[in-house]
Amino acid sequence: MNNTVALFFPSLQGGGVHRVMTNLADGLLENNYFVDLVVARTVEIQQESELENLRIIDLQAHSILTSLPKLMRYLKKFSPNYLVSAQMHVNLTAILACWISNTGTKLIISEHNDVNSVFKNAKTIKGRLVPLLAKFLYRKANRIVAVSNGVADGLSAWLNIDRAKIQVIYNPLVSDKIFQAAQEEVLHPWFQPDTPPLILSVGRLEEQKDYSTLIKAFALVVREIPARLLILGDGSKKQSLKALSTKLNLEGLVDMPGSVKNPFAYMAKATVFVLSSAWEGFPSVLVEAMACGCPVVSTNCPHGPSEILDNGKLGRLVPVKDEKSLSRAIISTIEQPVVKGMQEYAQRYTIDQATRQYIQLFIGMNEQ
Image (tube, rainbow, N blue to C red; front, side, top):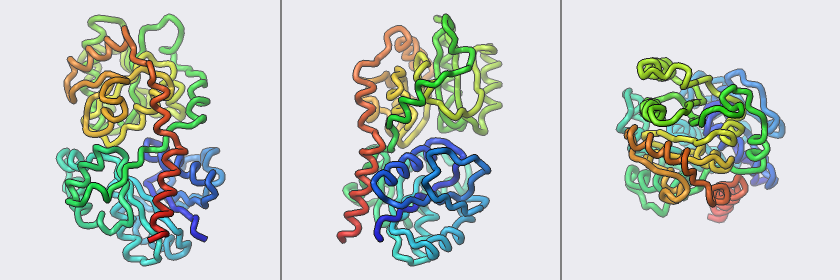
């Protein structure tokens, strides 16, 4: 048998990487691969219906680092033909596990972020150490995948390796499931008829997403037109963002209700979707919003937005941390939304297309 694939990522708690890996799992299942979802911890989440045909391996570890010995035991016991991992700290653990266990499992690591930005913005020794370790350990993987051309270029420079050795595979995102989910009802009162334009953002409430700039930009927007801002997600910055909203007299105009199971229904009904990030690798939410038919505005951060938005043709791009430019782009998009060709362009990022590229990687490794 040469068609068993293990997908290794932190948890089933949700978020971008969770969606990417479970989407890839769906694609591989449809192509007659056996798939294991290997997670450091399940975080006591109920299994979703799309996971029913997958074997879930819960390593029951407190962190990715402490999952190393258990991942090694999994590799020795089950010997999957391929291990695919995502995110830098996860990739490093996967490399060490494959290297030490020496089971013959072929490893593909997937980088989802701009490594230079991760290093520069790290606040802890651990945060700066992880990118430095990547310089030495990433070469031990059988294949390196980047989720955008910008990530690939930055990773090539960081690792000092030939750019041709890094393959770009966009995240597997678009399928009929998104369009079906987009049709579901949203119970939030701001989506009722005859309500002001709704600005939506979705993502972790962390420094990388720079929601403070979005909230400042929104304060400028409501000086000129009525609007409301809804941010879906959880994270460590929630209280400080609420305090900023209060300071800017935005009570009742900004809502941060946390994560939701179906953000696509919100995207399909929002007036404009905004990505305010300081850095990214490939912001999946931009593609998902486009697929749902929602006009988008984004910072032109490294990396991904300019690729996804065809250098601004499919949505307005603004400088990072520039609330004035962001507010103007939001107002312009509310008044004159850019939607032509947007949903068609999102079809570049289908689950089927990404799955076929991964399968070609598997075949190429077998032929060597």
